[in-house]
Image (cartoon, rainbow, N blue to C red; front, side, top):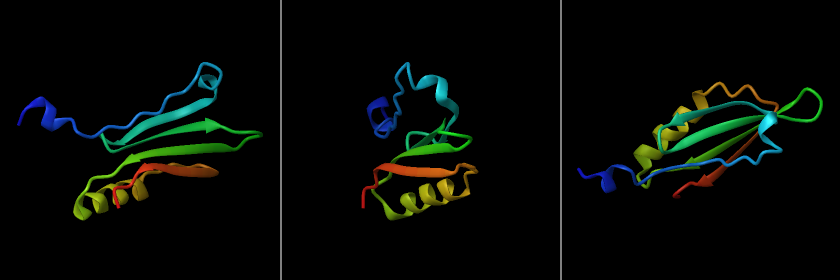
Length: 86
């Protein structure tokens, strides 16, 4: 399998300089498929944004959702966005 075939998936979350100090956590949940960033919100709250690039097959999508559901995001508010390939 060549390099172009291995890396067909990918996610990114870009944060500007003004927002960067608010980042309290960020991790990859599934390489090339899901990652999250947690931001300090007003008061003592947090906002977690999960970025998803789901696989085309239902079996692989199910594995992705299982991984996300088991992730301990521990956030007051969570937004899940991306390409769900439904």
